[in-house]
Length: 208
Image 1 (cartoon, rainbow, N blue to C red):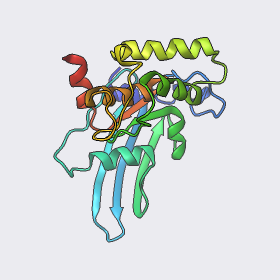
Image 2: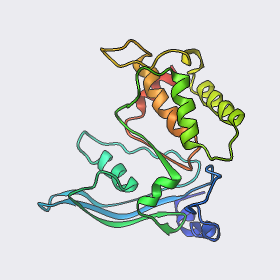
Image 3: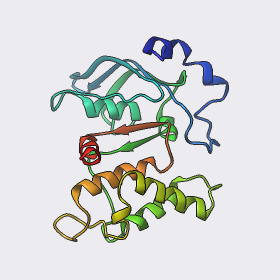
Image 4: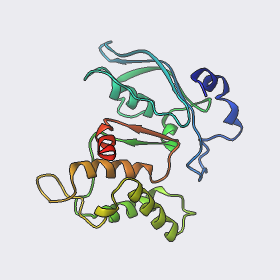
């Protein structure tokens, strides 16, 4: 599907809204469009100027630019987070529907900084996250199966019984494994849209 076709057909799924609050199938297809996004500080300085783009299902979109170019600002704008003190203009659409903070119901975000309870093992962490993130319709056996699947896919099964650790304080898994764990945590629920800030370390670890 081309980007033009994505824009033209984005309303097809509106009859069955992906943003429905009772949705339990989190693997639905989502087309994300942002149009003419402007972000300004209180002093009037423009952080983003008329940014537009589209991400169609099955596509990876990379935001590239120098440090301070506004990559994280655009991610925060699309996710409607950390925007205090900023003025935002423009449209953000998921499957043709204008979204605000409800975008979080169909997306996940791998942040640049990893935040974990260092005394937990990799498996313990993911089992807790599975109870919090997976639909209540999932049985205990299904939660275990999902955790084991994502650990295997991201090559963390060999470290599943290791403590996560805290750099410089508690010995634990490597920095690369920690970054992959952050990624695995967010894909547990198989979100239609996945945002990643500085994901290159994860990609490098998998390729190597």
